[in-house]
Image 1: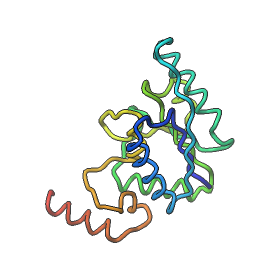
Image 2: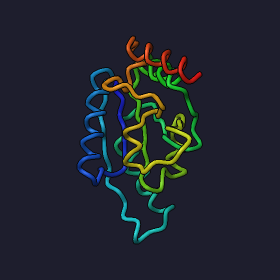
Image 3: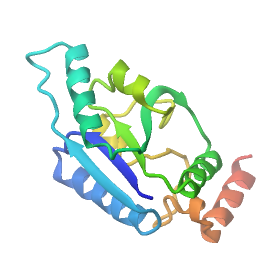
Image 4: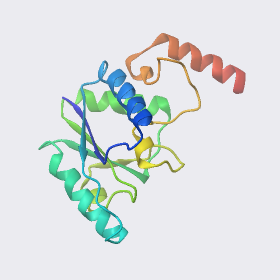
Length: 169
């Protein structure tokens, strides 16, 4: 069972690319993770619908056969950190590959959303698609070197959440 993140384009900024790779490296220590990138469609010669359609087709071309496909989309299900961790755990327990699709600058095509088994919303705010890779599920709490640890039972993370809630609840 692997998690595949299928994403349109590569980060143009070297520092942003470095931050993304660092996060992906950290996450891959706990989850079998593979990032697959597809070429971004030039937007200058086509309308947004055509760009989304072409990029969506490229994303589905690299999705492993039989994978559970999840579209990152504003209309998707929003989850708390705890819900997201439980969701990841349920997916892992199914022992089936999971492909998470992140669209380009114009988002995902209707066909890509419709062909996905489910949709999730990364956050209720909009990010450049390059930054979306840094936020598998955004949260207000930052604990250095503990970014996605709740799903694997990290006690430091849990203690920090309790402290945060006591201070802000």
